[in-house]
Length: 127
Image 1 (cartoon, one colour):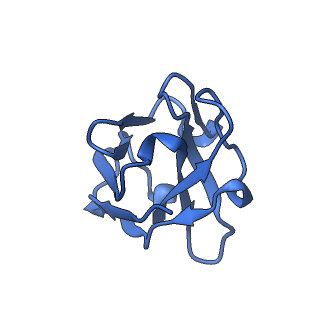
Image 2 (image 1 turned 90 degrees about the vertical axis):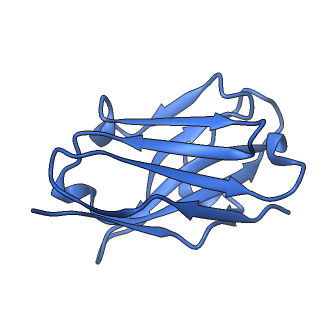
């Protein structure tokens, strides 16, 4: 199993930036494909980004392309979500998620595919 702890959320003005971090416990971080899922009030959970075990393959949802970047540092057991040009519609609770995959190159593109979740961190974009 893996435990996930997010940090870096907060209040930011439209157009601003935040970097979310997710620290994973244990020595098996490299076994997991990682992702970030968000949930806004009254809306369904949405996969924002995904990254393979070896960090070679990444995916971000169309609504954040060109603004958000997902990355990971396997030496530090940490995955990141760099968020630039933030918009009010990016306001949500952001969850770090992990899934065991068969190969180093797989990314998981559906919310239901993730087995482990962090507690979430609030991101609020408002003037």
